Image (cartoon, protein in one colour):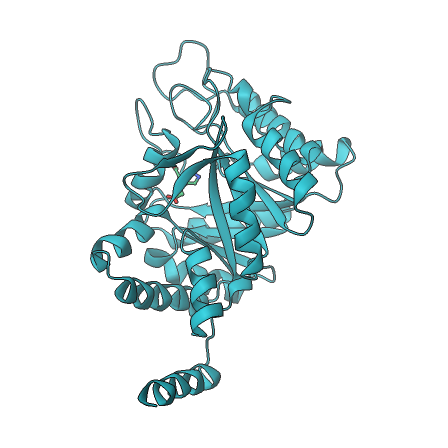
Length: 326
Ligand code: PBG
């Protein structure tokens, strides 16, 4: 009885709440690896795995039932090289994965990360000039490669490509290449306001993509600087982005808020790996605490103005909302 009254009170609270998180707000990220029946633990991200394609397909089917409409894919390539060739190879991990999903699961929106940090030995999001040991960027080579990656993802069947290299004019280069190859319907989800953040550390373990030298401060944004973020969002929209992103989310709620006020385009926020792992640590395996912390954080991101939230909690939240009704 008491339980029912509590449940009813909870439901009433939700109904009158100004901000309600729903599963379709969420985008579920996945890490894909080669092989069969693989499910590799990522130590720094408890509950997140590197999955082989067969296991990934199973997982996506479960996620879809929970009313999550979109997934974001990251691939762990067979090999890394200076040109990042696996990132655009016909038989690359993402290309194979997208084709497999398209064949077996029709109604899920596929977003693919377009970047080089996981595909090059030096772990930067760009192509570097020959023999460069410092961050000497090959601008044209990088733009060409990012465009090539995007086209190869579109060819495989991606709905959105998501350039995350923070390379100026990457959106323009990708839009042009997609149109030229008749992928006029493939959309661009730009990581426009991506801060140089300490909250990415667990992700770099997942993808084995930590920079071997230097850091990403020179191309990711400084956390003291809001204007540059808004400028970059504006530029990406002008260059043809269909959706833009602020990343990370929690330490950047003001940026999300300002972007939502200023621009007339869907704004996504990336609730990144460190934000996820922090909640896991704080809840120490207590599922109720974890749920309460995650819902508070994700609701705050929505309240700030995010139309979509990329979160490793996606599937969990879907379950909480569907099974527990909160
Ligand atoms: C870079 C990229 C990063 C993340 C997604 N794509 C960060 C980086 O290492 O610069 C981070 C996501 C997360 O922390 O969850 N291509």
